Image (tube, rainbow, N blue to C red; front, side):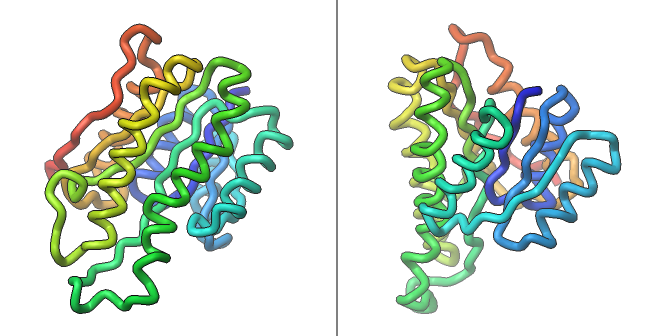
Amino acid sequence: MKTFLSIGAGPGMGLETAERFAHEGFRVVLSARDAAKAQGLSDQLTAKGYTAEFRTVDAGDPASVAALVEGVERDLGGIDVLHYNAASMRQATLADQPRDTFNGDLAVNIGGAMAAAQAAARRMAERRSGSILLTGGGFALQPHPDYLSLSIGKAGIRALAQGLFESFRAQGIHVATVTVAGFVTPGSEDARAVGELFWTFHSQPTGAWEMEAVYTPRG
């Protein structure tokens, strides 16, 4: 059974993306800092008959992210799809942003994605297969003064996908991001549409791989 690992799983796009892959027969591993939250999401999938489990991770701690990836690889035999969905959604202007929180926000918004890609890439390259999927945001294209740390983080997610796409493609790894240009409500058609875009990326033939899709929520 193929394995889908979600880092920073949430009730919106994270859960819908996980369910989309579960529907295709993937074993789903949902991870979050809050164990109860991750278990609740996992329980929703198992109640529908899917194979799912949960684990904990601190997306802002590279060692925690690497340990999660290594543990899933060891216990389940490999990761076929890695989805990085974690984000610190702090609303703060430059004047309002506490100085001691900015680096922490970036550690979650982009540092964790970098750590996850590093941890997963080696085994994926050995197998010459795998997808690394990143939840991006429209603030990467139009930064918002009220969400500066999130804007910088999403710009970093987009740069990470762009910077890795060609070199990872040569190793058989598909790196892709959905740049979500707006807020998405859990359980909405928009959340399901984002999950569908991630599935589309993973299922693209090797010669037709794409790096980015921009999605504007309709709701």
